Amino acid sequence: MPELPEVETVCKGLSGVLEGRRLVHVALHRPDLRVPFPAGFADRLTGRMVTAVRRRAKYYQWLLDDGWAVVGHLGMSGTFEVSPPGSNRPPPGKHDHVVIETDAGAIVTFRDPRRFGLMTLIPQAELETHPMLADIGPEPLDDVFDGAMLVAGLAGRRGPIKPALLDQKVVAGIGNIYACEALFRAGISPRRGCDSITGKRAARLVAALKAVLCEAIASGGSSLRDHRTVNGELGYFQHSFAVYGREGDPCPGCDCPGGTVQRIVQAGRSTFFCAKRQR
Ligand SMILES: [Zn+2]
Image 1 (cartoon, helix red, strand yellow):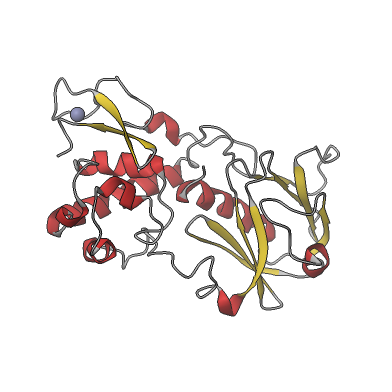
Image 2 (cartoon, helix red, strand yellow):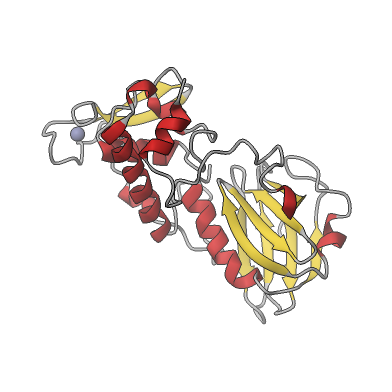
């Protein structure tokens, strides 16, 4: 599933195509994705200008010039593809559910074979309070997100840190890949209790989260299955994974000779880590 770096990569690609452009033609090729599109969705978008493209957690947001915002989620397999103006675009394929043309002649296509994606309309004034977005925790790349803020997010929480990092109320946009990678970098065991993530240890984890997310964004995200940039290119951060998906490999940490990457299951999800390095 796409996490923060993959959604950020898609938003960066879309901002160059959509920001300041008017949507002159919008075609829906089915009535729903995970849930139905809002009534009159295509008509409500047609003629609108996109004033900004942003990301919040794993959601993309296109602010429109009528006070509404298109808010969407890539689900499991959703991708956006941009055909530049004047390019010869083949007719929409079976999984091309939304096709949007801008006044510059670019075509933006949302493709989602498994249809776990989401695309809806929310008033911009409600972006912080809408039930879908209200309970989301801090953005990890915001300057204000620090160790103290992570500690506050974990307050009162029992159980190990790794599943807690996947809870969007604690910190936004983190999924299985970047939780594993950040804990490895911070040298913190995924089994360590949330109540012991304090002080310097919390600061180390926050620094590791920021670093791994920034590197992943610079790599265009991780393409394990479906993730593509809007130009159809693969992200390549998967080649930089230290532990994720590397069960049985030698640990790449230099300070734990003989360490091996292990896999355990926590809250139903695989966790990859080095028991020698991560305490
Ligand atoms: Zn190790």
